[in-house]
Length: 425
Image 1 (cartoon, rainbow, N blue to C red):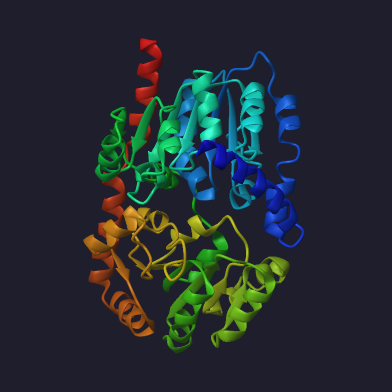
Image 2: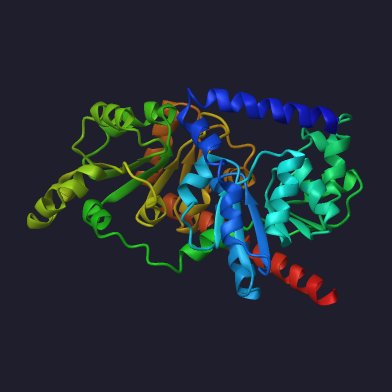
């Protein structure tokens, strides 16, 4: 099977190069890998000690941040390498300050794996949540490099648990230890003969709790909110917005809405704005005319009822101003976006129906801190219930906040295990 896997990987490489001519995202995927080895050669010397972290995309990177920070603190003389598979991760975090080197991970061929590990010479490797690349893992095993899975999630449908997944199961033998999120994942990995597993929990809880220690203030959001009840709609997709726009247009004047769409392409932002009948301001309009707003003491901002955030990087801080949060993605694939950010601020949350692959969303729906809605009518009932019943709003917010607090601590379990392992060796 590994033979056929390698053939398919080479075919995929050729196909991706062709498709890159027609897709900007695939062009980033292909072009971003052209100079990886030159970058590694220039930034990692033969005397460097290196710790390598791999994240599929942005979500996995954020999940890994607490562990990266913990390892940097414990191993200050090591260089940190972070690799990404997806452009949606690399392009957003390529200039992060955590890593000494950040690059795309070259495609999983035998030649790439040998060359990559020869340049990096990692002393430890961490794969975050998932992505198991057989050639890289086999080469790490051959080189006897300690390798760990962080915040792992296993599901019955994965190839490891199928009759044809033997070469994937062999690749798992690379890992010194599996740090998984839940008991089900532990049972699955044990069912195929791996007992080097610990339920550490999800490092994202540590990541979002750390947010509380930062300065989350945004003066312009405070001016817009103007002491009124505010609903923050984060990472919305068109399917979410189809349900939301009617509610916004029919809402009482005393309710404010902040919308941070997942996609901030100009045509989609313009379409969204034109569908809203309330006084609406775009973040780009505000920043372009900030001197005028300042002269008028931001009166226009205060009078607006809808604020569309057509930029990235500030949604987390905006959640700190929310009285109610709607988190988008729950009507598409792969499903709902990050609900832990509003939850850590003690905000009740509304989501769509596609959340079953996300343990935190499933748990919070079960605990009734989060409400799942199927249609526009259910959306209205949920919003109205939270808007006009402050006791219910506070109770659900408290459930969310408590849920985050009681699930913290995964990072210390992982880092302490690594330290003890190193001391014993």
